[in-house]
Image (cartoon, rainbow, N blue to C red):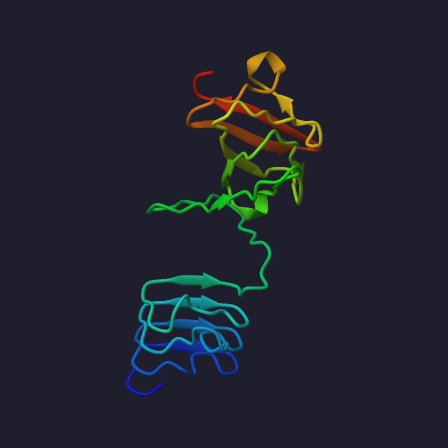
Length: 185
């Protein structure tokens, strides 16, 4: 650190690249100095964990927990967001066996190029997807490979709208994927 002040760095090489940044807390080996977006002038950041990297060298007011190898986070107790949060929106690659994977994002869009039978990947109990399907030509989706138990439409898969999106929520409880159409049929 050169002229930066009120920084706290604990761990081998933690915060080593900070030059003028102030009020940063860097905890863990290489935190803020992992070789990716080494923190230099950003201020009021918290980087926790081995190789924890900021989103840019100059970012301010950001908290990073873990590094790009982190696959899950556990928090015991209530979580309260005092400001908004952003969900990941993912465009499903259209194919005969398009893959619906909650790890790609909690909101997914899918523009059909023909009638399709999607497959699933990486579903764990407690995960869900809001799926926005753009049909446009009276295509259909066959849900047999996901084994969806439909909670709307009398237990049947919804008919897709031919204009705009048909919005469907899919969620997994235990070993079962449930589904429901959102809004008017």
